[in-house]
Length: 201
Ligand SMILES: [Zn+2]
Ligand SMILES: [Zn+2]
Image (cartoon, rainbow, N blue to C red; front, side, top):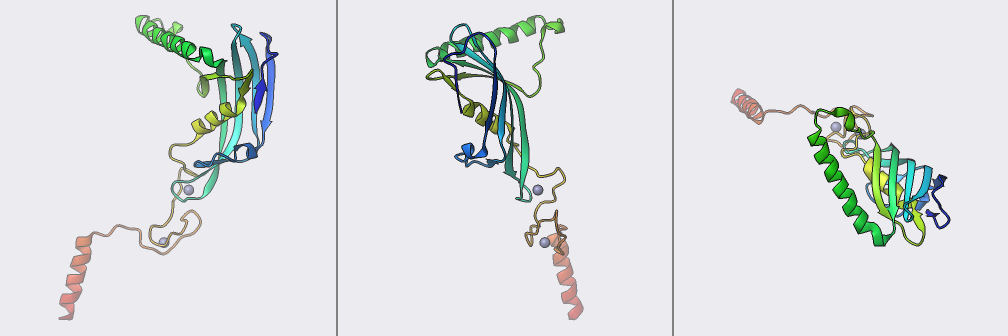
């Protein structure tokens, strides 16, 4: 999944890569990539050593529903802007980026009522900073990052998932079991038992 940048110049070059799910077989986390992953966009060189990749990452992953424990597919689709720099410059660029972000925040506070100056960041648009080595950028890392970002915090196959029956373990989305789900007040149970005992005597 390496993209050769040795011949890349300031001219914008198209990126169009398809990665088969087998490439992510090593990811044994709480998800599994299903179907091909596409990275489409552009790449170009900036300031001599920087490489800027604008891409759209589309994929699909299978996760397990937290309620019914059935697998379901989550689509992945994100617009990513990644600035790649050589390892020797990484620390410096990181510091510069942080300083610029700090200035922007301070500026935004200073010109609070001048809302036009504040550029809204498009939703789902991720801006990142990464290293490249040996004149190649690793698209695999770009994809992996997006997979992790798309991972739902509370995976649910559907908002209304009924989950598993706590008594018999049946998937309540598919079958209706006869188990008692209402919470019974233990005091009422004790009272009922006391009553039945009294009736017998
Ligand atoms: Zn479910
Ligand atoms: Zn049941």
